[in-house]
Image 1 (cartoon, rainbow, N blue to C red):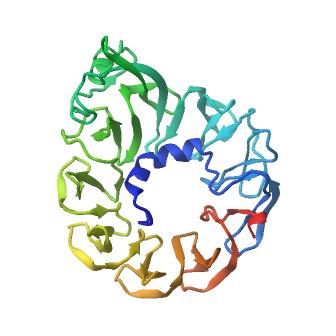
Image 2: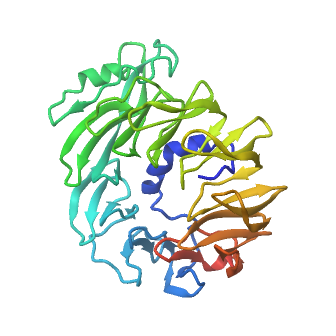
Image 3: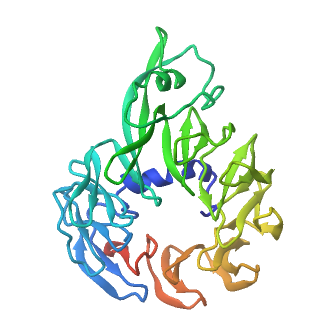
Length: 395
């Protein structure tokens, strides 16, 4: 995650969900023509497409016109045989969130079979072989209850198996009495890839997979962790969503960031104004306000690079984009400057290349700073599976 805007904490909450509901269409816009390039700038898939998504697990979603009909293609541009769909999410391990009408979602196999029938408000695939199934419901919440977050998720419980009348969960979520108003909440089920429910929780705001067989559930502005059986991990209610990376998760309490392990134990004290998930054994750390500066800490909380950068991104493929004096360059995990500070913006490395911006246009460089695709595009995504969708009208 990069530190390029003040609202990145909010962004963390919705990353997984947005990956599904946005169809993964990155910079796609109406009335434009898309093709795919490889990481040498050569045309890999001619199209042309009306919409084109990033590749994931060797599959991308495309549209040929503005009818909304969505098709799946492989890295060679061949269409996969699928039922009629209007939307699709990112493929994970041969499974694809998809919707026949853009409203109800299920899960398709790469051979076009519905593994989970399209009857949910949202589905999200997890890398532990589970699926999050969400049903949005309009419920009553007591307006005389304490302010949002004062009780938070402390009373939240999960139920296991198929039998559940929902009474305990509804009361713990505050869906009650005569002074109630109606609000949208979510009923969540954690299921296997065939849709068989393993545990569930009702009346929450959001649930997503946090990595390491952990789930993060948010309600009334606070977040708690649950294990693969739906058992809460500790009693802490965190100020923003939790995602594990390399065995640790950055969490916030009382306006400070620290890190916990998968058992909820604090391993890095709440001493930082901002922390980012670990990559290559390092986390971006921020201090100060309003003139925040960034450095890097290791897994023990030791500062290994001083708070010297105006902005800093996570490490990817051994390099991280950082900025000084309004210009971006790249450093290695030892803190050595390996690519000069000369770019107006710089992104993470994917498939051996990174997007960099000079003036108003993006191009791509390799890990030695050599230009592999000259700056020609106003908007770009990142490379995945050695493919990137490019809007031709943006040249």
